[in-house]
Length: 168
Figure 1 (cartoon, rainbow, N blue to C red):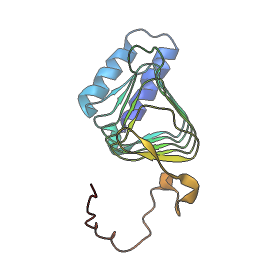
Figure 2 (figure 1 turned 180 degrees about the vertical axis):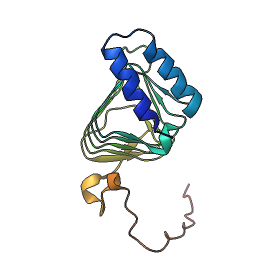
Figure 3 (figure 1 turned 60 degrees about the vertical axis):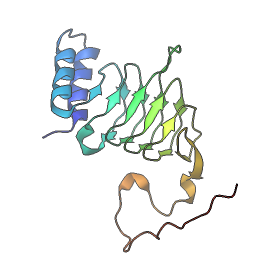
């Protein structure tokens, strides 16, 4: 079964060539098969990828995404009232599962948005953001691997969580 992004590209082609009804029909097919809404009025760059075929993803009208952007499942990329502008996402961005990118924000190139983060402010180039609301938690240049390659080369497991007492 093809990824939802393939159906998006077909709908987008019909939309750009002013074929009136087919983009809406294809968008409906995307919703029925993948339970997601990817607007044919959004602009998604080449090489961009929806993980797990785009299940439960929402990309609103007018969103602009650069090239080689990876979007996890259950990601919402949406506007925020009363603003007209919607998110602009750069090249080589990884947005983790369950994340929300909301409002008139710009996410620059080479950014990682951690799973379940809520991005409500613009993100500078090379940042790693996470949390609710999202804050900068690191920098891509400090990673020892390329997150966009989805590599699996390390053996073992993560350390156990430590019990940290809250000082009041």
